[in-house]
Picture (tube, rainbow over the protein chains, first blue to last red):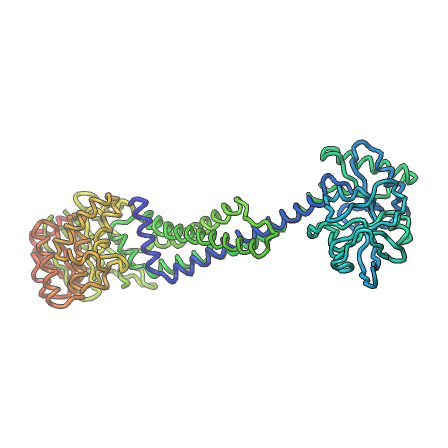
Length: 402
Length: 231
């Protein structure tokens, strides 16, 4: 018997039991589709996060006050807990390396911002002129903070677009004086809206010179210092330079934590990849279940077609031929189910992409191959037992049943 | 053509041993027309299955065409069945989802014959059985007589030397039963060895040679003196 005849026979057998075949296809398709959809979701999350990190800036080295003694981010990484503060002097010292392109000290707080009777509680960011370039932000109106000495507390402010809208409405904004906390600042610019970039909502923020922020919040310390290295290759050297400089300035104690953007990105990448694999592993269980369902369906099929198997033997089919016939049936079932599942999965991914346009959805090719491979593999593997049972049937007994 | 020597067939049923065939010695020449009769459970069908290589003897020797087939393996037996033996059953045993033509085609498909030649052979067989216009009907769209003719066409499509029929008219009305017997006998007239198991004494008497079985043993053979196998 040749392959085409076997396939045709198997196809006829499958279309002879439509409900059973349909349900089986559905089970297989759901298994494959869930693997496809979940991998594409996981991949999308990974790409989304790394995209966000890239939008944070390039070749960034972030200096936080306080030393995290253990690897893995304890609270100290985020809040800083140290007797010695990071100061403007430290930030200025960090500029003195040819490998550092830009330095921006950061101070954050919250203050009420008011103009002509309207008042809002807004996050206030104290920084320097370099911040705009480091974060790849753009201006909608006016200009950003002026350059010059870090410790000059100029009374100027740059507003986020939402703050501008809520305080000024349609009124022109440049040159107006706003009150922030107990001080007055002249508005010199408005940030362009580009959605959220990690950490800062550029719509809802007020940026003032770092020295002004220190006066406003009555502190001499910095929240952190952001450095931009000249290139990706010198990032480790910049990190080393930061540690040495700070140690010298802090009486020999290295009491800052230096985080490179690459390291953070790599960590997130690893976490999200592991998460994707875990979720896909769970989806793969449904494929395994589909495999067992295939076995069940094939066992029922063998039981129902006992007389037919006996007949085939009487007509001169060998045990091997009968095994091949039933495996062909299972293989076809799995292949059709997998094809259906790929279509369903693609459809699901598109739907998610349509609902959440920000997510770069799309299953990686290895996931498609793996899903189809596992579907075919389990389908055939789990049909081996029923097929062999069919081949071993005693033809006399098989035929004596009607 | 067929020689059986001291064939025993014993089934274990529970803790008992059922002797389905006892000391069967039988010689059948090519082209003979035999009927096997006997009460239910006398071993007629077991003998037929054994002759058709569907069942093994517990002991004894079976020679088919001079070849000892008692000890052949599964795939050799399948091949012998495919090439030399045709079966006709009381309940037709047509595959319900396949058309008449596809049912008849099955043995050729299993033998790996190319599709074009298969189709031609099937057309000829359909025409010979007088059911050419029923080629694309499924079994449930055919009458009993037509179904049995499809089954006979399938049994003879690969031109076997031996045709084994187990109650071929048992499920048919008188008229179509007579037609089926006519077809079987005309096949025999053209040289095929025909062996019919039946309850029907009228059908049994038509055969050139009648065997009577009781309790697994052949108790009478209308040709005993001339055809029993030499010991």
